[in-house]
Length: 134
Figure 1 (cartoon, rainbow, N blue to C red):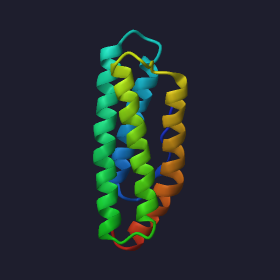
Figure 2 (figure 1 turned 90 degrees about the horizontal axis):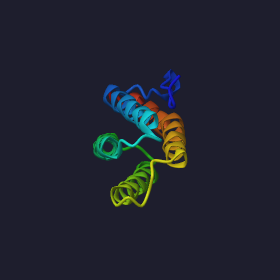
Figure 3 (figure 1 turned 60 degrees about the vertical axis):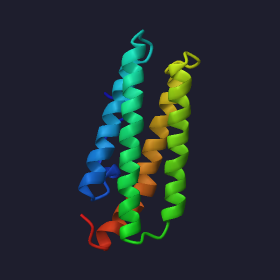
């Protein structure tokens, strides 16, 4: 059993978004597997991949939301911006040896993904599909 399990309840109906979500889940599960090890450089690399892929994913979602005029664009984007700030700060602290890859940080990512995918992205996906996005 993985730390973060992908399930149909997280599907948005938008193929690119769902594939990007699955990729983030895989990275978080890999980080979980590496937590407690001495593989700092590998963990740092994965954290950077997570940040850049998350940023690209958010850019994709935000582009779709603008294009299809999704109602809650600004509050959704604010959630994205907050997570990116958290990731960027953590990566900086980790790189300076001021932080460890803790269970607390992994749980934060886990809970953010579960709640955001299920509720916010689910609603976004339904609206996008209704408006003809694929």
